[in-house]
Length: 407
Image (cartoon, rainbow, N blue to C red; front, side, top):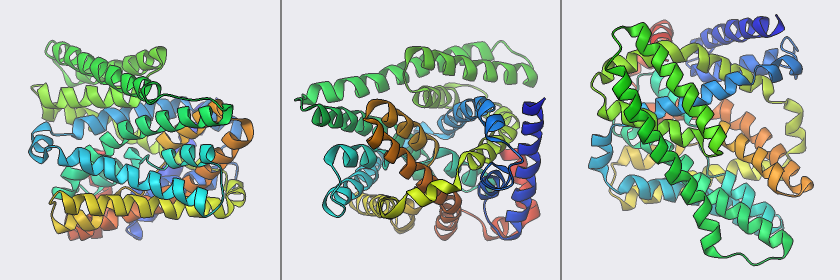
């Protein structure tokens, strides 16, 4: 009963705060997070820590649909027209954050290399969920969106590789061992290739099954079954469910026959799931963690943004993208949450307790800042780049209606 009541509280508070945020032209996701912080254990306690913990299945389901949705938004024809430039930009913005945070921690704050390498590698991650929600809410379209979606999707793959290499190197340093370049690269690259291969196979299977179904209800049931089944398979194989589901969505969207119908079904399924996910994320963020972040946390927040913006700017200039993309792509990459939180949890498992705990605290504190400010910054960047119509951004009730149907 407590779990059902908890879900009701998530939905009601999320909708209420989304409406309030519309009045000030803030994205819905910011309202969801504020609602979560308010009803969570840190403030009013309407949602206890125990109930929030018991609802964590919502996080797994939401992240699965987020990855699936991102893949479905990727148009291969557009990506192909951009060529290798997308990959170069993704690597540059990720490495920008990694280099600035890692070197700053070592040379400005005197931190150890193992600590700096792991925290720097987590700085590469971007939150695809928040970015996707802003794009969908305001129905953003244009060159910046065409570049942003594949960059956000590929960012997770690049981040996993950098984290795998950095954590291997950090462990070797802490243990006083020597580590080969081959051993650092083989495992993360192999994991990514396996996830993509299985994702493509599942996507093809989905297409075959979808040709046999006749109604929208059946299509919805098949979609949910595929997303849940793929997530379970990824967990069993201990590989990235995010990458696997991105590949499933990409395969279905680009090779399936009724792509529009597929997108419509996703738009019906995902809005309440995403709403609950972000409100629950807000409830999980403990405001007390901000006190433990200190100067290192402040540097992490600022250094990561500086690295992302610089890397995105110089790479888009070098690859010849338009001025709006050069100026605003980096700002749309500010949000950070799910992937970073997941990697910080992994850091706690693979590093000594003191180091892992400090990294986790910094990421939790930074997430509060990024997830509250990031979506608003992303919205402003998309608006400045001409991807959001002024009328759409300025009419709250119309935006709410569109977002409710579009996710």
